[in-house]
Length: 267
Image (cartoon, rainbow, N blue to C red; front, side, top):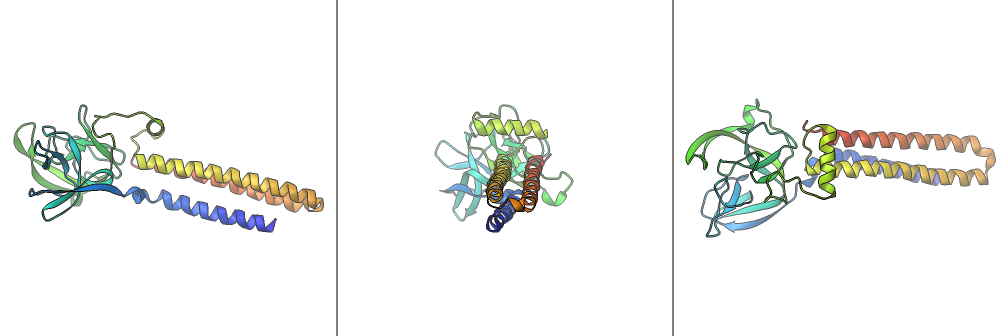
């Protein structure tokens, strides 16, 4: 029985540690896939990119060809273009404030994303908020406005974005289990929820439930076996069962609380 309790305590400690680490590590999904392209044009990291008729990368906007990805890094004569994963994207707040969970889309400004508008191509979901009053996060530049064939002065900043695999569909919520769960999460917390939040919440929520019920099952089985072998120690054994029950309830409540906290980020 002592050996079993030690194992249970070890599993509990490791599992709780993993839950806490995951809950405070949104950047865990920070990897991305990128392809290198040669170019003589000047791009900035975070620019939205499309390709012209000759196959050369150009700044993406409403008047260019289909959006293809984001400049994730650059060097002399070449750029890396990411179309999946998590990267920094240059955005403007002209169409609304950027918050965690906001859908980012292609805008009228060359290479710059804004809050997704109806009929536009989705780039991804913002994983962090940018305070409109934090001037040190913003810089004011002149960019080409393809809709008016003129230059416009806008504020831009970099924000971490989970790129969408469904970039060709404007505001498409998609189908499938993940999208259904994401929509349910949106309704639960009252704002848009990023994919990483859904995945982390599922891992932690389900993990805490599995761990709690696993503890109850294993401790209950060992307790009943111990009662059969040594009925005189029933008080000690039952006391241990109540302790395990209390630990299991705490694990479930902690897991559900962390799950809600992850989904609530960005509200």
